[in-house]
Length: 177
Ligand code: GDP
Ligand code: MG
Image (cartoon, rainbow, N blue to C red; front, side, top):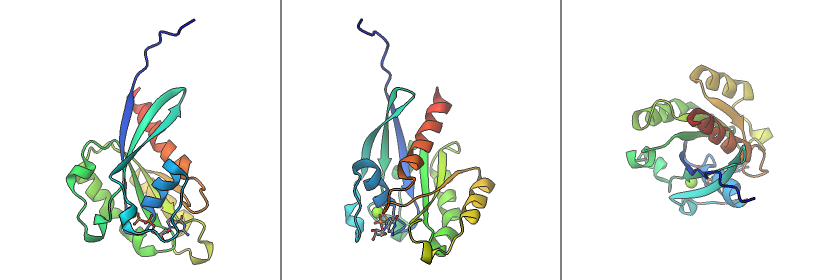
C-alpha cells in the first residue's frame, strides 16, 4: 500500500561558536562530508551546510552555521545567531584559554538568541592526549553548572562528532514534538 502518512519537514538552525582554531570548521567538515583538513585556514568556512539526520524514522534537516573566521575579531554578527534553535559551543582541550572563553561565548549566544537554545559544550581535539590542558571533569562540571549537554570530540579521529550533533538535534526534536 502507498503510505499516505504526512511527511513533515523539520529544519533546525544550529550554530557553531567558540574561539578561533578550536576545530569548529573541521567538526562540520567531519560531520557533513567525513573530511578533515590538517592545516585548515578560516577560508574553508562555508556560511552553512545542511545535513539530513534521521530521528525515530523522521528526516530532519540540520542547517549548521559555521563562521568564516570572524570570531578572531569578536565580530560574530547577530544575523549569525538569528533563529538558531541549537548551538555547539566549542573549546580545544589542549588550550585552556579557549575553555576560559566559554563564558563569554555563552553570554553572546544568550544575548543574540532565545534563552532556550539547545546547547552542547564540546571539548574538541580529544586525540591530543599528551597536550591536554582541560580535564574531562572540568568540562563536565562547567556543563552541569550551565545546564548544557557535554561531550569531548575529535574531528581528527571522528570520535563523538556525529553523537555531538545528534544530541542537539534529538533534543530539539524532543522539545518540539
Ligand atoms: P576553527 O577556527 O574553530 O574553525 O578551527 P579549524 O576547524 O579551522 O581547525 C583549526 C586547526 O585545528 C586546524 O589545523 C585543524 O586541522 C585542527 N583540528 C581541528 N580539529 C581537530 C581535532 O579534533 N584534533 C586535532 N589534533 N586537530 C584538530
Ligand atoms: Mg573555522
